[in-house]
Every structure is written in C-alpha cells, then in structure tokens.
View 1 (cartoon, one colour):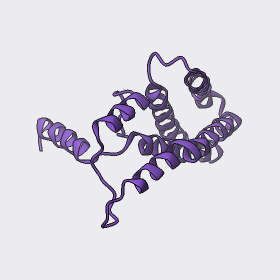
View 2 (cartoon, rainbow, N blue to C red; view 1 turned 90 degrees about the horizontal axis):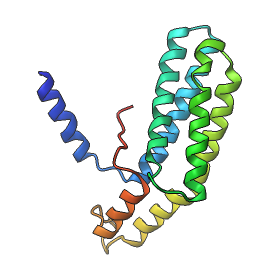
View 3 (cartoon, helix red, strand yellow; view 1 turned 135 degrees about the horizontal axis):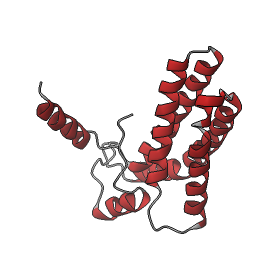
View 4 (cartoon, rainbow, N blue to C red; view 1 turned 135 degrees about the vertical axis):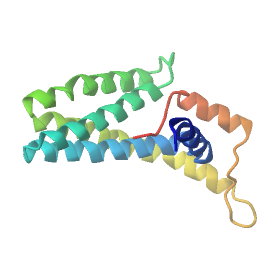
Length: 164
C-alpha cells in the first residue's frame, strides 16, 4: 500500500468511525491517564524510552484537549480549562530532565478530576439524550439532527482528531 492509499484509507476510517465529540473527550481523558501512569512507571523503572514515549503521548493528548476548547469562548469554564491545560503542558516536559514523578502525579490528579466532572455532566447528558431518542425497537438513533450537530461542533472545535 503506497502512501496515497494509506492516507485515503485513514480518512475513510475517520469518516466511518463517527464518535460523538462528548465521548471523544472522555476517551482522550482516559488515554491521557494511561500514558501519564506509564510515563511514571518509565521514570521509576529508569527506562527513558518508556518515559519519553508515554510522556510525549500524554502531552499530545493534552494538547488536543486544549485545542478542543472552543476558540473565542471566554466563559469561566473555558478560561479555566485553557489555563489548566496550559499549566500542565508547561510542567510535563520538565519530567524528561528532572525525573520528578510528582509532576506526573499532579497532572494525573487534575486529569482524573476533569474526567470525573466530564462523566458527571457532559457524558451523562449525552447518554440521557440518546436514551430519550430510542425508538420503539429500543435502538438509539445514530444520526443526529442538524441542531445536535451544530451543538457538537460548538462544544469541540473542528481540529480534534483521535490518532493517539
């Protein structure tokens, strides 16, 4: 398979795998936590490759979370999230030099709390909405109306990708 075919296959798979933006954020939080934990293991086991690989992936995911905050949104929540993600992104690269697991543990605590809040609010609302849209056969409607698509685009900027 040449690079053009691979690129086309990647784009088509992204189109087919329609993940609701709310669910995507939850998945990103989960993966960030996994990579932060594995980066900590790499530090404790004195395995720089493991530390670097997982630290880099955690940083990439948190960068995507930062980018998913709607640009131009100046609400308290958006300003808080941008500030928190920025602070985490400033601190995490320091682990490569210092080996300070405290930074990883603190970042993990923040991400865990954000994940909990996300699950209690946005994810719960999404699930309740899907439940209310079940048809008489008990199957949830997969296709969202224009209004829901607009709301999903408003919640997450179009730059979010899930390639990590």
